[in-house]
Amino acid sequence: MRTLLTFAALFLSVALLQLSSGGVGPLDALTGLAGGFSRSEVGLLGSAHFIGFFLGCWWAPRLMGAVGHARSFAALTALGAIGLLAHTIVFHPLAWAVLRIATGLCIAGCYTVVESWLQSSVTNATRGRTMAAYRVADMGASLLAQLMIGALADLETYLAYNTLALFACAALLPLTLTRSSPPGTPETPRLRPALAFSRSPLAVAGVLAAAVTAASYRMVGPIYGAEVGLSADQIGVLLAAWIGGGALAQYPVGWLADKYDRRWVLIGLSVGAVLSCGLTVAAAGMGTTAILAASAVFGATSFPIYSVSASHAHDFATAPERVELSAALMFWFACGAIASPLVSSALIGAFGPAALFGFISLAHIALLLFGLARMGRRAAPATRTRYVWTPRTTFTVGRLLARDRERDRDD
Image (cartoon, rainbow, N blue to C red; front, side, top):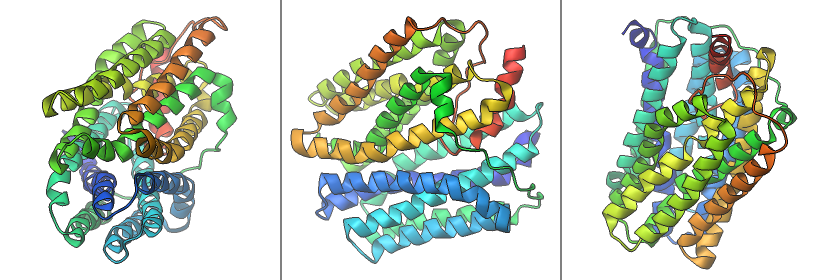
């Protein structure tokens, strides 16, 4: 309880920010389709978001060094709110893509501020509880954001985007008014993408497959839902089911990843993801309940792949490498996420809604085959770090998790 009270302002700002950012992707897709955007243009919006995300991860630590944590958070949140409000002024896919870069930059930058603040404030004794509460605030608000989609889509465009902008503005209040002293400026981790590949090529492949899955489904999933006959509120439940299924699977998958060879766990998850893709396509003709249930199964098989991949990479890393390795894995995730919405939306336009899951299945089949090939290249590590549910938020999240991994290995 003391942990929750200590960081209440940070967690409340995260939740409000997620309520704003979690709804903009599906709302853009539904509003754009209704206004005449092509499927590829809707996919471009999703790709633009991840371009902004990548830029925000780079720029935010430097901004914090110049003006501090609270002012950085305020500036980045204002940028995100401007991006949301400007949706109501201009209605053009290229203009909206630029605005999505702004909102993506806002999200990555604000999470960088929050995670840097947490990293500087927690101790080893409070780190586990703090990260658990942080995940609950983030994931809970993400679920609520998806469930809001139906209500927002029924509003006029200016009301829907103004509502999201209000949540973004509200996120300013807890963090900027907190009495907690902001920490010093954190050291920016060097970005060395080759480090991840040198420690585990399979982990990089797993992160890329996770990026293809998450970016395609979260950004283009509303197109799929509309194509198979779901209403706006049902599309929100579709995405919430995917997130909820993934969250519930983290603990049993973590147990398996700590008990057995993580390469087999990754291969098993990929097999499950391919099967669940087929199940989701088949469920399209079985009614709404079947589609939603299949989405939850799809989330359970695909969502944990990033965390398993990250844990496998850290098994081969030393303590001084952990922060930079986490940043390198996030870099590869961003690379995969930038291209995926544009590709998957184009495939839907050319071949129909099932093409989304065909594209995702190809990524997991590639991961499965590469995992089998890597099994014969080297043995499993003699000692392993404990499985950690890794948020795909910023390059700095590795600082929050590095000590946990090292302490668990020592234990």
